[in-house]
Length: 201
Image (cartoon, rainbow, N blue to C red; front, side, top):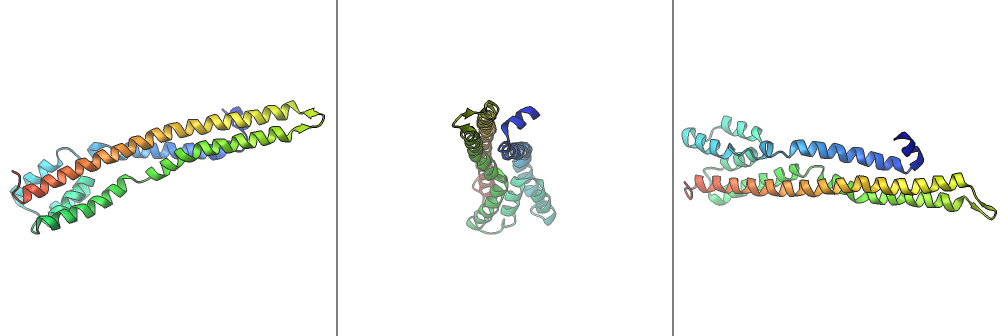
């Protein structure tokens, strides 16, 4: 591996940094965007059960807010349980926007890495080509410099694609996961509003 890095030259280092950042983001998002952590399936049922049994309390709201992002949204609605349906929905939507913003954390960075990695590989290719043409003289070229220029060009192109392809795949996967979680939390919040206002049993 070290021999490949040496053969690829200095343009490989930004790509290595990009790959490390992409891997860290992917691992963090895989851990953070679990359905059980974001939108626990049994949470709405337990909230409704407690609401009917004991009503809304500060302790209940504090526990709910600390439980999960869905809990934060439901707690925002329950803080306005005595207000109109419109006020309750507005509070839920405001909190929902903040929650979705948190769910999208680091995704822009991952998308940027996916976009710039091929460009960094292209930069390495250009540097390699410059070395190749720079080694040419009227009497011929130095084979060692020519070989090094070719290796810089090819290794950087390949490594740029190796970084970009998985980064783009995971970026799209996480975007879809966030969209799915957002729709699920929105539906559960609407159910809560309808139950509180007697529109659903």
